[in-house]
Length: 120
Image (cartoon, rainbow, N blue to C red; front, side, top):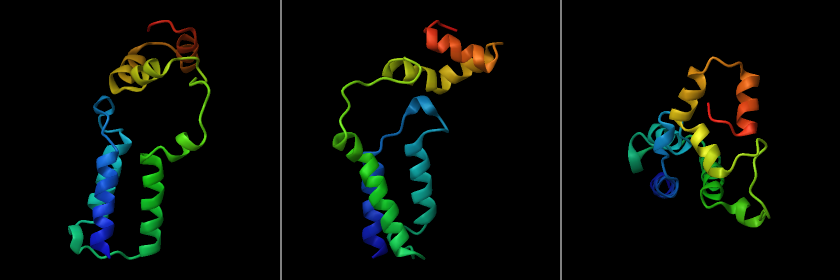
């Protein structure tokens, strides 16, 4: 049974891309590390709690396939800051966060700048 679960986890990892702009902070990378840890012996690994492992796999599959995004369609894609999707990706990239952290502004000033869409 562990062999089939291992293969299914690998399929989820394939679906879940790695975002190279988030080095060391990417969810896909984190999931791959957990799978490697849990299945350290590959298909020959033994699973302590099979039900829990299957439950996690189902959850990851739903997230990777955007199940809820498809089920609950949005009319608009907006963020609380008013930034576009591309702008959010730029800000949340490792490079964007480093740029924000290098600035001498307080946290609230940084948030205000983001909401006004001014470059740092």
